[in-house]
Image (tube, rainbow, N blue to C red; front, side):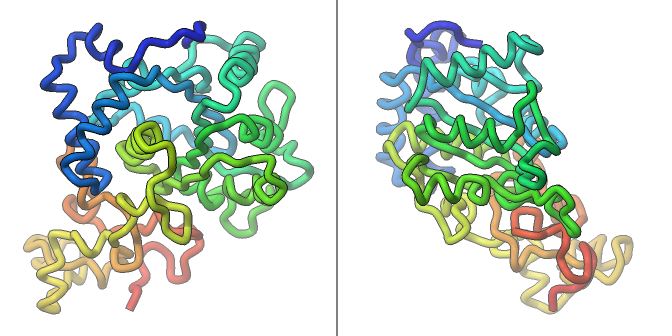
Length: 325
C-alpha cells in the first residue's frame, strides 16, 4: 500500500522493475488495440504513462464472491505485478492488502482524504439497500454507506463484474436484500450533482481482466471515459456480441448445430445454439481478448456462453441451457 503523496510515474516504476522501453511501447500498442484506438494512440498512452504518477485505487467489495479479484489475479496482459505494483497504487482492497481490522479501515479513509477528487473507485459486488444496507457491513458501516461516501471524491468509478453493474447473483429473484448495481446505489447523488465522476460498468461473471485495466488507462490518457453503450459499458469491449466473433460462427451460418455436448457435431465444433448458448445476445470481449493467457473462452472449450455480461443473466427465462430461438 502506498503511504506517500509523492508517487513515481508509472513508467518510472516499470523501469525500476527492469521493463525495457521496447516492452513498454509494446504494451502501450497492445492497450491501444484493445481499446480500438488508431495506432497513433499508442504514443499518447505512452506519453501519459511516462509523465503521470500512479493513480490511487480504492477497491470496495460488498456482496461478492471474490471471483472478480481472482480474475484480476490471473490477468496476463499486463501481469499482476505490473497491474498492482507498477501501474496503480492499490490503497485499499480486502483481498490483497496486508492490513486488517482498524488499520485497514484507517488506510482506506486516509487514502480517500489524501487523494480526494483524484482516485479511481472500483466497486465489486452487488449493493444491498434493504434494511438501510445493514445486510452487508464492513467495520460497522454498511456497504452502501461506504460506497456513497467514497463516490463523492472519485475521479472515475468502475463497477467490475455483473454484480456491481446490475446486482448480479445477489439480486436474483426474490432478491431479499434488495441488491442492485452501483448506478442504482448512486442515482440520487448523481442527480443532485454530489457525484460527478464517470461511472463505467465492466460486467461479466467474472469480468475480463483487461477490461478493468483498459478503461483506467483510457481515462488516464484522455481524461474521460471511453465511449459507452446504453448500459454504461465501454464500447471497445462491449460493442460486439460474443456470437459475432465466435469461431463456431461458420457452422451457425451453415445451420450445423451440436445436439448434445458429446455428439459428433460437438466434436466437430458445430454451433452450440441448440445447447443454450447465449452468444447472439451477449455483448462481451471473451472471444477477442480471451482468457487464460489468451488461450481460450467458453465456446472454444466446448461450452456455450451463459450471457453473464447481460442484466439478469441468472434469472433468464429457460435457464442457462434453454434455446434462445
